[in-house]
Length: 415
Image (cartoon, rainbow, N blue to C red; front, top):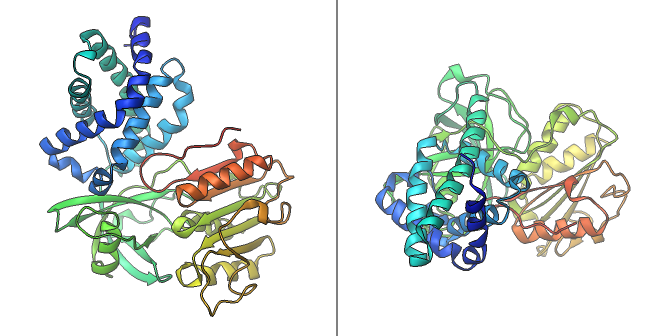
């Protein structure tokens, strides 16, 4: 049922309150909800809880919703991103009722008497209005999977070291009936779920698929993050690197994600593709590049990657081989801390952090071509810098596509 005009006014009136107290509300919500329903840790990353990333992301979403309660269309990109993440974790409609209970309870606990019965009723109506949007969109995503609507067992068929920090895992379904595997859109991700002994619980993580779609396997490429188990950043990446070997089983979700290159555009040779990444952000862009190559696309491609040094840069030989064999592909490497044995012009092209203004605006960025599409992935600071710099060079933000690993989205520079 739609909100009444008075309820809309009440929700909008709470925007300043949410700006000040939103994170306190969501932190309280998660504390009680997960404390009383520990099985939900099979959906939520405990690392993101302990770091505060998950409560902050939800607080930002609630704040954005209240701010745009009169114009929900403005939230469509954020809703799409969240729905794909939810679908990749197999969030179910009944779980929205659990969140409603604890969110409204946390609002009462934090705001006290300021949350009047009328305001609480307005927020209950607002919550279910948004939840209904999520539930309907997630159903559409589940219906698109041809029956793959729960976790499936995959075996690690091959484990390959790509750099000092990144290892690739080639995952094949245990059930041969799952082959050929569903195709995915280049740039999308899967969730993997595995048992963490220190927590005595399953934990999920989302990893970009790092290869073109093939019928026999999915590939993810995982950076070892700094941290210690249990429940710290890097918990799952360290577990994968140190304890998961060829023959071991991981639970895997159907591919999802709203960041991708549309395969129908592979033959659009008038539209260059610029792939800009830092660190492990190259994984989803490698999927895009490999998909273009596998489909013999002649679209001009510029590959721009920033790493500390050649020792931590994954896929460098592969990128060089692609560029040598295909005239439409060229690459540039930035190294922020090149090793003593690295040669400028051989192992890397620029020293320091990547920045579009250091590049040739036509050869490297195709700035004058208004059909050029830019795909950017890496740490949040890198992406906000690229976004701002590209817009300052005249690129419309609609042509800049960004993927942030982890919870939440990217704060964008206004055009």
